[in-house]
Image (cartoon, rainbow, N blue to C red):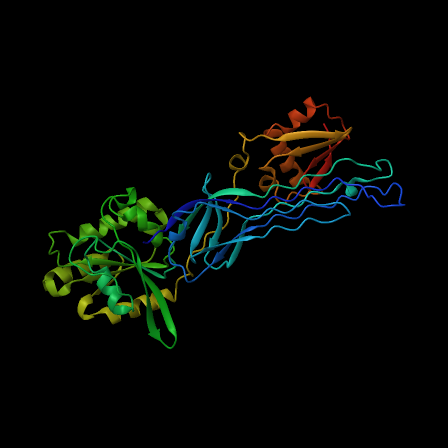
Length: 423
């Protein structure tokens, strides 16, 4: 089954808690704190697998989690790091944050993407020992691993997209110009999944062509199979628009052509600007006047036109040569840039946060959503610090700290970030 969209939840491993321990050894008095740090949690990593062609593996399994780091132990023993989890996807998969729809990664050329980072291990109590604090009886908890709900969307990587109404001959064309073997029949919606083929042009040159099924009037709004497969046209460098010039089904080829282009524009305005070559198929069933009339009309619209009869390969070589020549002037297959995820999609207001005050002047703030919100924050950088303060103010952390009695100069610890509180 061809599955090209899925939604899953991923969870990186939590960091192990730091240990509270004191050195105990015969004949050694006041050994001092020696609690070790917790281990780092494992990452969740997406990996391209060129042996996969669909997202069918995600139909039934929807939750993926890496291993947690183990807690630290006494005698300065560091907890074991958690094992990372690899999730394999087909090339061309676009990973988006589900709530905002922001693109996290495009697995077209990226071979590996760390989607959820494992939490750092918490500090053991030995790290908190100072000349004035010789026996700290607290340690830091491990940082929670990042957790995301992501949507996976497979967008085929093809240079050329074959578009047109059902039964105009798209499958016939791809079967004769490549090694693809799609199902071919004389009824609508014979093709239920996109078919990919490689067209070899000699001297080691080739390009990938895709037969896009299901385009009819209303496809832009999801009528037929159009909405389901229009996404696969978005990466194509150019389109070959196939039209039945014979009109033997009682349809007007000019109207069909305009209808399909209108649906492309509704779905994605950029598609309306994509270069097109028009192929008038089924010329064996058309009158010469019909062919000439449509050719003149298409060329008057500014399109390059070719007449073909796909089943007997008439005109197909000339069409593929024209396509190849046009490709040499076009940019490479489209890639999607990573986007910034809005703060509102990151903060889990329902889960809140926790504040503890293990000793005077020291406040520890914990929340499962902190790691991904504060990812990469540098307290030495002014803009980065401003961003962090904005997050803490919006989420109510500062209000809660003030209610707890925090004073100017007190230390606030948010996992691996520490700073002095300035009102």
